[in-house]
Image (cartoon, rainbow, N blue to C red):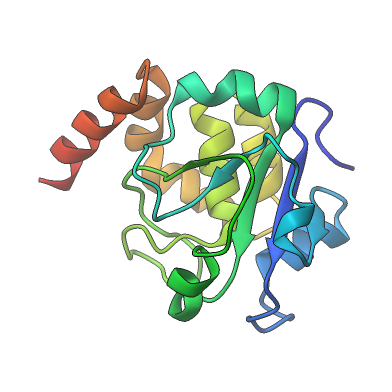
Length: 172
């Protein structure tokens, strides 16, 4: 069942192995709505975009509550092309986090879609929803453990600028 407090929509570019796709598994569990056209993403939703110049922060909570959270599921090899597509909504990039998924374990910023969604939810204080998304993977809870300090500090930040400053410290 989909979260009652946050509407989550994912654009699926059909570029990954369906057996390993985190988005399709989230869909099977009824946790996200999947669309196959970018224009079908909710108009005012917050879109997780690794190429955005604005960092995601707790200040984005109100937009997520009202208009939802969206992500783009595509291959990292084609991400620059996919994110060039015109998308409605506000784009935000997630701050520095480390992947826990089996494909990119330990690689900074190479998150799976479920990790990106969970990180965003955690930062805006929807921690139970974040944990629920991750719970359908045996490696899922490791994402929170691996990034606990980062996530807790980002969640305490008031805005994008504070997140960027924290991120710089973490990356050093």
